[in-house]
Image (tube, rainbow, N blue to C red):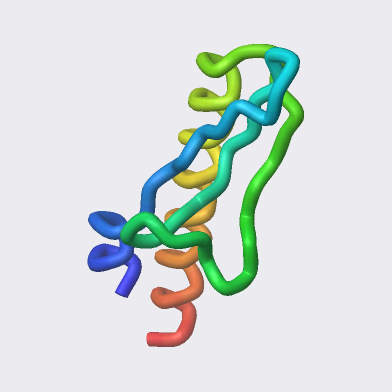
Length: 70
């Protein structure tokens, strides 16, 4: 499942106004049912970098959960 989600999950970065940015993990363009997001960040680049790290950590957690269930 985590491998399948790897292709479907992505980060959406949004400007909230006044140069404030936030990221959110989405699946096929839609927010997850349990929203995963963070901010504020002072630039788009920092929000993208933080979001990519969060997405990698989320996918690693999913994979480790699957391995422990097997």
